[in-house]
Length: 91
Image (cartoon, rainbow, N blue to C red; front, side, top):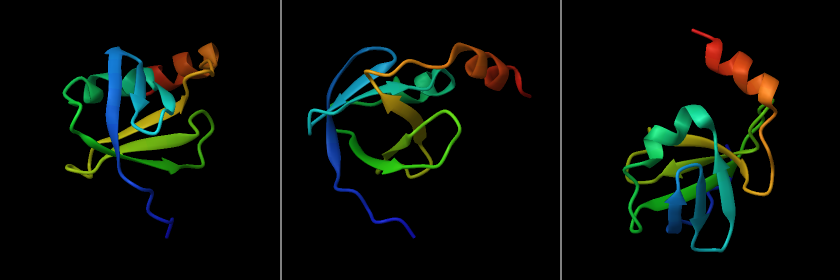
């Protein structure tokens, strides 16, 4: 079982696909998960966990609702366009 990360708050989420957390880290949200984050508020408690995935490196978890898991990469990274297209076309 992975070690639990310390809880963080949202510092800024004024660009739909980028979220900055209270520790200063910035994350680019997977295109298919952006709608999940639109209801997140500055007091939403977020946890970051590293994941093993072909495209995404981490997942942001809304601690008030453990079912809200959003796949992300560092904001400085770019999504591999072809992999996104293939992934979003899957049923």
